Every structure is written in structure tokens, then in C-alpha cells.
Amino acid sequence: MAEKKYAKPLPRVDEESKGFWEACRRHELYVQRCGQCGALRYYPRALCPGCLSERVEWVRCSGKGTVYTFTVTYQNQGAGFRDELPYVLAYVELEEGVRMLTNVVGCKPEDVCIGMPVEVVFEDVTPEATLPKFRPVS
Amino acid sequence: MAGLSDAVVAGVYEHPTRWAPDKTAYQIHAESARGALADAGLAIGDVDGFFTAGVGPIGIMTLAEHLNLTPRYHDSTNIGGSSFVAHVLHAAAAISAGLCSVALITYGSTASSDRFAVGTGGVSAGDPPDQFESPYGPTVLGSYALAAQRHMHEFGTTSEQLAEIAVTIRRHAGLNPAAKFREPIAVEDVLASRIVSSPLHLLDCCIISDGGGAVVVTAAERARDLKKKPVRILGGSEGLCHTSMGVRDLTDMAASQSGPRAMAMAGVTHADVDMCMIYDSFTITVLETLESLGFCKRGEGGSFVQSGRIGLGGALPVNTDGGGLSSNHPGMRGIFLVIEAVKQLRGECGERQVKDCEVALCHGTGGMLGLRHSGVTMVLGRGR
Image (cartoon, rainbow over all chains, first blue to last red; front, side, top):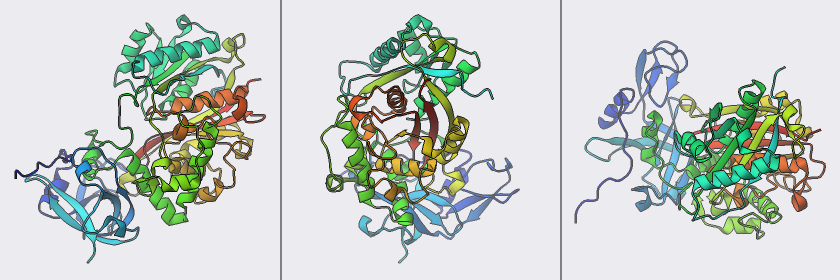
């Protein structure tokens, strides 16, 4: 049986996001901190929205966090997703303090709750793309 | 203060269709324009300001061609479903500034007959944040569900309380002959409907219909001799919420920015507002909007919507036309908020008329609540 092609949208890597996605390929999670005013930010971008400085520090994350909110999605007609229903869409609040939109995997959707401790797990979805997702802390 | 005091709503029209497989959106725009101009007693040749959204990035030019308009002021601001509330505000500002004298705002869509997946299709705009979102499968509905789940967690809001909103608005739809769904529903029906994106059930979601509408705005002076009593634009403001570098509070809406500014400009308090037209893409949208506008405290929306308060005959009737939850939702329903508010202020709503309606508040929400959304508040007053 031919292997099924990965059908979901893939990250469109650009100059601003390259560092983040390259780290994900190494299975490392980074967010940015402004080198001038110190503000933490996610998602990554070239200029700090607070002070417009382009001095960027990359902060290695522990990969630990908690579920800030989630929804179990039962209907999505988008390619790839319609074959994997239901799935859990969530905001995970990282220990470092910023929230990431992601999927919670590795457990039954009905077991997910707000406040649940989770840890990052990297899914190499294609040879070029790795997505950070989260699973319950074992 | 210059303000918007010079501008009034002179004409409105809601297209009666909910299913129009043989029409294009352009035809619905044109028929709606005709209806609103007739309502105002103005001719298409009087129009020198034109406002629309949802017809493609440069669609306003094609639509102007379709209507053979050459306006001296045009605006196709697209901030999602709230766009048309913003257009009315922008039209009022343009008229107050002398940039145009008769502004036509039109909307038309065949979302339903096109089988367009308004809320549950994949989302991928290709903008910078999209690469951090679309791989995980957010839907429009899912983005509101994320907020609903958080609201329940923080404040103990229940599915029953959200359902009460759907039940009340359906009751209103029963009084609107044009509404798509008019059969009464009960809280149990909402809870028994399937969960589309937890915690939201199918009946927590707006319907999908075809439809359209139009609004005509002009100067108070000009409106004096027109057919209908003008409705005054007392105040308005806009707001935006996004992921805020990763620290956004999902129980707060753009309404908390635009609402206080609009009410201050209008010089009204919450007690002065006789009815509200609130964008009801989902039940949670109404609940969080009422809180963010300050009609109740943050977290108290659940109990606020119970006990009949937001129903006709209650202290603050909401969405008397049956809303997007039951009457019509062709994808971007902001224009209908304005149209129903104007009809209420003119006393034209028959069975669903709010008694002694003098001040109405419209609030449009556009976009995806849990990702980024716009809010536009506008306060309208009965003409004198």
C-alpha cells in the first residue's frame, strides 16, 4: 500500500521564522526575547513590536507547560484534518510564559483538561518539517 | 466636538432571500441597494460614497461597475463580519468631513447555495502567523470554542447558559417572517445537538444562509425632507484583539476597547440602551461581548443571559431579528445589526418591536475570537 501523502498545511518558512523551524528540526523549542527591552514573544518576528529593536535573543524552552485552553474538534473539512477527527486544538502556556497554539496528542481527547501539565513532543511530519506538539507529562 | 452628529441613517433594506442558487452575490448587492435607496427616497444617481466588503480584494471596483457608480469616496475595509458596522461609521465620518454626501453600503453573499464552509473549513491565509496556526487545524468555530472552554473554566459558565442565548434568539426569529429557522427550541435541544468543537454544540453556532442588505447614510440636513425619519449615529469606535505576542486573555474581546469609547462619544450609559444587536456567530460571542461591553461584570455573562433578560420584554432585548443563530448568516452579518437596530428605532418591527426604543447599540465582531478579531461598536438614536 502506498504511503499516504501528508495533506495538512505545512509551515511556510520565512526569514523571520527560520530560526524557530530549524530548531524544531533538531527537536529543540525556542521562543524569542527582545535584546533591547527584554520582552518575550511568540510567534517569532524580526522586530520587537514593543520597541522595534531588531536585537533578538533566542530562548531555549524547557518544553514543559500547561493547557491554557483547548477544543476537541469534531468537524474540519480541511485536507488531512478530516481524516483525523476528532483532534485536540489547544493553547499551551509554556513555563517561560507565552502561549502557543498547538495540538495535544498522546492521550484520548476526552482526557484533556485546562491546567493539565504537558511536555513538547516533536513530530517529523515531512523530511523538511517538524511540528512541536504536546503530550501529557508521564 | 465635530463627532458624527451630522450623519444619519436614511435608508435600510434587508434582502428577504435565504437561499438564492440562481443569483450571484452581485445581483443581491444590486437588489439590496435598490431597496435601501427606495427606503430613503433617494436615487442611485445621488450616491457619491460607496462601501462594501467580501467581494474579493479589489471587488469594490467590479461591484461599482455592476452598479455603474463612480463614487468620489470608497472604502472596502475588510475586518470580517463587523466590516459593515465599520462602513457605517466610516461613512458618517466621511460625510461629516464633506468627502461625500450620500453613502451607500451594500452586502451580498450566496454562501449557502455555494456550499461554502463558513466555519469548519481549513484556514490558511499564508500570512506570517499562519505557519504557527494552520498546521494544527484551527477552524473559525474552533477559535471561538477555545474561548468558550476558557470562560467555562475561569467563571463556571455552563453549556445551559450558552444554550439560553440560542433559545432566546430562536424565539425572536419566530416573530420574524423572513428568518430561516423559526421553530422554537429548548435548552435541551441545544444540549442534545452534536458537539462540533467542544464545548460548542451545533445549535450554539450560527446558521449558513444566502442573503444581503444595504444601508444609506447621509447628512442630517439632507435627510430632513426624505421619506423616512432619520436615525441618528450617536457614536462609534473600533478595536482589535490578537495573540498579543503570546499572552492574550481569551475571555476579553475587542468590545472592551470599542464599547466604552462608543458609549462615551454617544453620551449614553448602559441603562440608556433599549436594545442591542450583537454579532452572534456563536453563543459564546454574545456572552463575551455583553461582558466586554460592560452590561455585566466579566464572568457574570452566564447568569446575565438567564431569566429572560435578553429576550423581548426583558431589560435588554438582544438580536430581535433572530440573529445569525436563526435568521440569516451569509458569512459576514454586520450589516443586519445596523438594519434591525434602525428598524427598531423607527418602530417598524411589528410583533418583535421593542417598546419605546430610543437608543440601540450594535456591536460587530469579525474574525476568529481565539486568534484575532475586530470589534466595532455603534450607538444609534431615534430621530427627532
